[in-house]
Length: 258
Image (cartoon, rainbow, N blue to C red; front, top):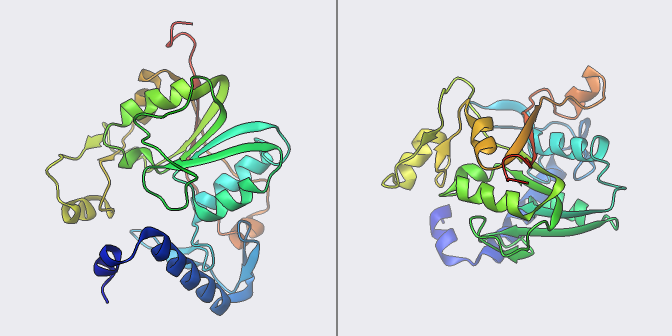
């Protein structure tokens, strides 16, 4: 039965359960000692290819995460001390395995949220967050903004609920060769969006103006090209030869009139 038909017939929770069962079975088939996923803490004979164009050694066979998820995890552990610091954390559009890992940490006051995800602990609209001002020490928002119809409104909401010394940790597709962010017309069909970016619900392609967009909505921003503290051989074993810039954004008192 074609996937689009299954999507219409099956409820989200059941679809997710079936996907996770498939991932588990696939992970068993790929068990080995050549590579290691720090998120599901399992060794495999290989990671799977992923992306457009395809990247070798990218996706974990068991938890379905790719390089940016593993990079994020190491940054949280080694740079933000996520396993020991007492933090109130908001995790937007949570990845199942990262949510599972963070929920186990007793030092965190953890909440995940998304508009429709069956994994999320609360269903919220990023453009109208129901949380009080200055609520969170850390907000994780990985590859979410590009799918939000009004990302500037979402950014203002994120800035509002972030504490003055808090951090919004962003990841997204940012094409530095694109001078200005390309907004997709609302009239585009899902098929046309797939052709433009390979995702049926993407609203824009971010360009070299990404940081300035964040700054315009009240943030001070640091772009971090992070390399975990491992040897090149270990980075290859962890599937981290392809990396992505992390954007650390904090409320800018000058921009917010404080």
